[in-house]
Length: 186
Ligand code: GRF
Picture 1 (tube, protein in one colour):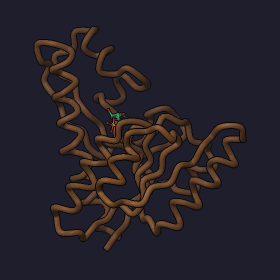
Picture 2 (picture 1 turned 30 degrees about the horizontal axis):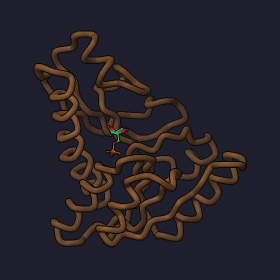
Picture 3 (picture 1 turned 45 degrees about the vertical axis):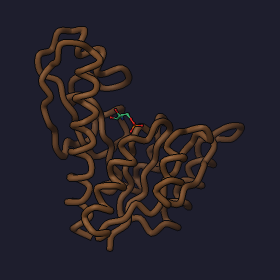
Picture 4 (picture 1 turned 30 degrees about the vertical axis):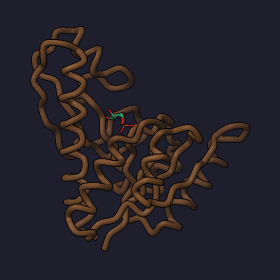
């Protein structure tokens, strides 16, 4: 069995999609911990419902290095082979990236290298793109700049809301599938 730690800051729909897909596949892979930097993240409620251990690592009132050292302890304590960022809204330091290089992965709602950063779906939609999409990539020191692992295209829908919803559906299919394939190597 191979473990993965998921880091999230908000809703946690990708975290839940990963956990559910792994459970359905028979438990060969396991989300061994959910780590949140926000005590109010809805992701924590999802973890409770799914019976997955969770840890809150606050960045408030201390250095980023101190917070990251606690992140690393939580990841390592959960015996995770891989670390998946799923809506984790913090920039990680080069030291942290170095520690997990090749084992830390992110999902981004655009066809990278197009539209890195925030509000990607809205920006792509407003720019009139006919084809939008989702990228799973390795995390490096930049903002959404790491090597692409896999992408899927999502055709533009009539409205922004419908397009967003189709992109999130694509994320929930792509991310668990790519992570399971990577965990198979451990
Ligand atoms: C997703 O769109 C993901 O691509 C981006 O942040 C969002 C997180 O959504 N990095 P959720 O918290 O998984 O619902």
